[in-house]
Image 1 (cartoon, one colour):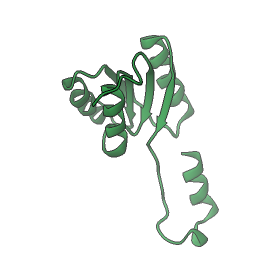
Image 2 (cartoon, rainbow, N blue to C red):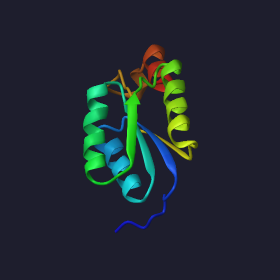
Image 3 (cartoon, rainbow, N blue to C red):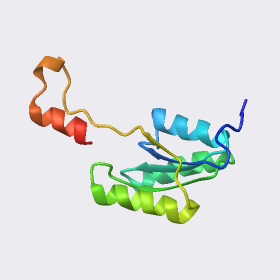
Length: 116
């Protein structure tokens, strides 16, 4: 049952076109939040927007590679231009180039995860 806890708020969500990110965008939207979804691929953003908007959620979004500073700036600028505010950021995008024991992670792999 929606409680309206996020009514009037605006949230950027990274990696929000599938899985946990999309589920979070949906829940925030059902709670009254305006959601801005992002992902690397435009077609994924559009699919997520179709899902959210078909449920009556106020959603917009643009492609964004969160590993690139200029993309992150463009996403924030887009949100501020569209809604005039930013209240929350939910970072669901991630990368992990290493599978295995933490003791065998190389410095390069650790840096990629940390800087993603």
